[in-house]
Length: 331
Image 1 (cartoon, rainbow, N blue to C red):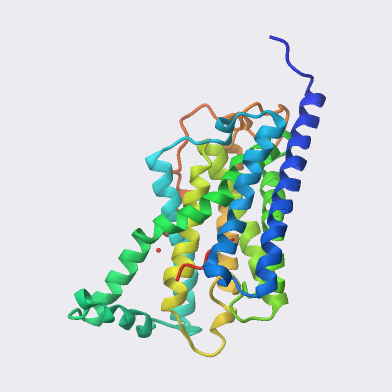
Image 2 (cartoon, helix red, strand yellow):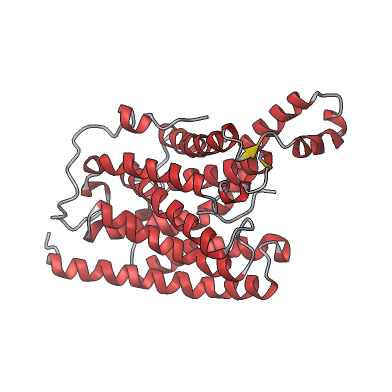
């Protein structure tokens, strides 16, 4: 069967990427306006933010229609193993960062006010504080995934379903992670700078920490997407990241003065932890073959073919420690 020359295929891939970006930022501009006009992520009961988070996904579907790509090419493969790994890894790197904050006294734990709020529920009123703490962590970390993944999936259909595999066809893994991470970061900037997507630190500081965090975890998200062949790894990584940081660890951390400079997505602790994860993943970049992205343009030196079944059992990545209102946006 005749195939298009590599140059023609590369041009087609780049056209697909540009089409996707125009659709994504065009749709997102509607919700940027609505959120910035009100100045709060909670405006319209959070529906503006939910709409914004689904813009990358809707843009991916539009791009498939415009460019004649099958929606199945976005990668809908399900793997219990990969989904569990994707759920646990964010717990690991987030808990590592917060443990340092708690042990050094940069932040206190636990914030009993969060736990005491559960006691107002009649069914739980007889439980002790430690028991309520367990109920809070377990219920948020499990049931909370349902709502968290509903919003995270909207982004991941676009970022990891379409953008990462398309980039992987025309460049190296390192550049794929960096470019997708830079775009992902820039997409958040309007609401970070002009709305209240921050934890109270100066904008320049919060934006710097946030950018380092997002650029770093983009290596993990891209690696998992290409290794597994599924965008659902990104959805679980993203949902778990949002849930464990914004729904559990940050609410349970007491402010001891300058805590906000170290915790959450706008503090330096998570950014440093994510950098370590990025380095560990980058060392394993050769395991991500170009063949894991459909119809890849050959000849990218950063990729090496993988003949074995994908595995995450090597000590390098498995050495990342694991343990987990959810604000709707995240890195």
